[in-house]
Image (cartoon, rainbow over all chains, first blue to last red; front, side, top):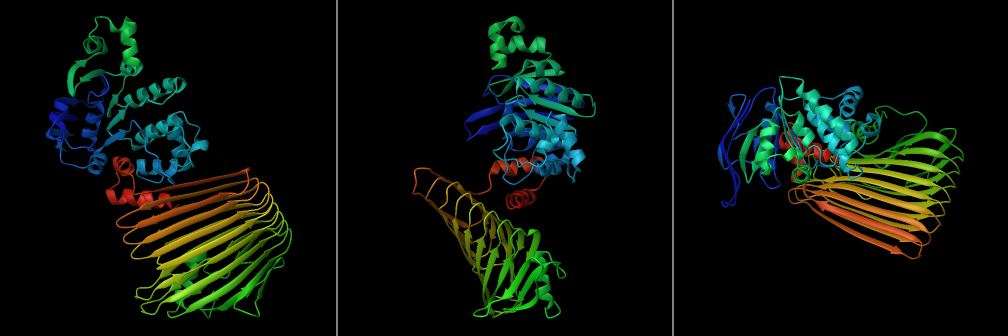
Length: 242
Length: 309
């Protein structure tokens, strides 16, 4: 479904944020990308969604070369993106943003459904503005609801767990499991959370702008953390959860 | 209504939502004269004898009634000046739908409407005042609206003003002055968009004289192309009171916005806040809406529409 070939991204012709990345995501797969901060994970998501253009390489989506397409065109072709830090808008309500995401005017019941999916009591939020009055956790869940409302064949989430309290976290996992039950759609989640890594089909480890390992969790984590038994190593747990 | 031309009827619809005469009290002014007027049992509208304008007298305890007082200038070369006084009885609760539409057609002669409004709110009364200003016409004649509003609020009264000027007015200088007694509350929400070479100035001067009075001034504006705006808010806290003013502006193209706050605490117990934020549309906001499938121009329109909603 999605293929990156020799994709690099440089800043000011000096610092290479992505180094010759080759990656393919198949239809129906749930892939988690993990690795230390500054490793290029968020830039990879931005390159796929068209927010930044790669300096080298080719991106193919559904067999079509989308390397030179802009954000809007990629979105319209079926790529969704949940931001790590959701954007606030003065005056735009939650309902209005969900309408934009769904590409149509949603009834109150339809919009409420998307909010319920992410564990928000719809009547308390549907008419609220997406302004500073919403907490980090609330706006993050609304961000995830917009991606669900888009219902596209590829959804990319950048650290969806950030800002979400532990109580809501279980619910969040269920949201991703439910999305994954549709075998027509692919999900890419950038995350440090072991429980998200647990539900993914595959894990990709990124370090210093390059993919160093791809595979099941048991094979990827030891290499990423330079530890033979990271799942039982307290030090590694701290690193993964950080 | 029959005396009104099509332009006046169109302006009336745009500023007040009316396409026929409303129920209850109303006064419709077109090209400096009243073309339709009606009082109700509780709301009396009387023409002034010494100058152009009307007195609107609301009986005490009147509940949930509307008053329509749109003013239209449907010809070019008109310079309209009107004095309207509103006397709101104790415990009354009314909605006043005002608004002004100025058209200069295809003429190069300008037209102007200057409304001088005075409000006297009785004890524990409540007024929701809704006002929309628009200008239309393809000629070079300037469309000018310079409203002056004075509000005097008795104890426990509550005045809400919602003013909107979105298009077509070349120049506007708005001055709003208010004096509040104990427990009186004033909320003003202003929405403004200018374009072309338009100029808009909105100036407020509020004195909170009574204990526990409060004011909240909220201005949201968009300045496009080569237009210029100035927002001046003077709030004087003369006793234990709460004052807040907020100027949020989006600038586009070569638009210029100036915000001048002046908050004065003349009492140790006055709590006054001013906030101003002026800037272009945030790039992240555009990116977010584009990732939802909107084009750049659709995203921009969505942000502006929401901001001025």
